[in-house]
Length: 507
Image (cartoon, rainbow, N blue to C red):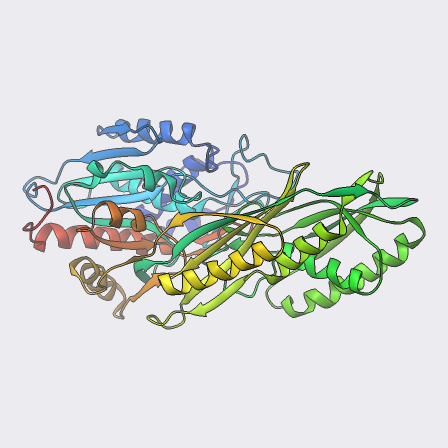
């Protein structure tokens, strides 16, 4: 395996890796060298196409950069059901501001013991690069007995599952089973997922002249853990945008005069925001006292998050005084909306123990000369909960002068007991002599769209142990790569040996 800058491991550790672990790591490290932020997948899509062709396989790309590969069956298994292996090629690039360019810079992975992470400047992209790497390794070695396979690498999953949404239904026409590799836990078999609705709120900009004899100050909350807006929503982490609104509201309620000129926080609806910055106009003679009060309020409002956050930071610096600031009404509307919108866990699942059933994440806020925009993500296991939350948000928006747009996908549910699930359960129990957890995901998954296009499909989601996805602390437990690979191998082998081809669409 070729080492790259920032990696550290020794021969003793490497000797403990299986061929599958080393092979998946090798494929993943190659992916890290290619920037592949959502919406910038041309290079990674071209690489994947060339990579599968180097294995002697025929691949193709559609107009949305999805890569589709047909893999012939192992000799003697040509008549078995078609199985799709699927993962997405894009990643959320969470960054340490000013130290990483998501479009140009390569991810720098570090291996320490059993943990794969980065040098801290960016997220790792294990979501879903590990799934992509596992498929590439399987195609490269071709050791797994299997029937006909269809590999699907989708684009732009992190932006509303776009690649899956635009995938032509013909790609799934003759597929009977689909294994999605976008899971975050090696000991779980996922048989359903939440809906995902991206809400965008717009408020027209309304400004006035800044107060006389004011000074400008830039205030930033930073250093929070952030994370995945579905997988980490129940971890009790601090939301930097919500925290900033609490801080400003407390300061204003205490009688201090502050006027907002600009706000910017978070990176996307599906990421728990790590930082938020505002530029303010404050009375010149009150700057020091006001900042002291802000620091006090910051300590108070972060006290409840000490167990979930390591080192929340507060920074301020004097800047040029703004000429124009928001009107009082706009300030009231924005702060009230941020504080009034649902954020975090709304309800637990009624079907599965200890699984979130509905949640919202206030993921991004920014202002420009025309508007203030807020981006949120709501996830629900049932249409009833979804309608309730979205109705509350619509009322909040209307009350405070926002217009609202919604796009997204529905939940995916299927019968948990089926041949594919049993194949995974039997493989896991054979390896560990204990049952695998069958559950639903607290996030959206591409099977939501695959189910709409091909309702006859039986699907499951598997994965490695990934923590703190969508953050600079994202990491993978390397030993879990072997578990993931063995579950894939076991499922394919059992389908090849036992699955009945009757009833397969298009066969």
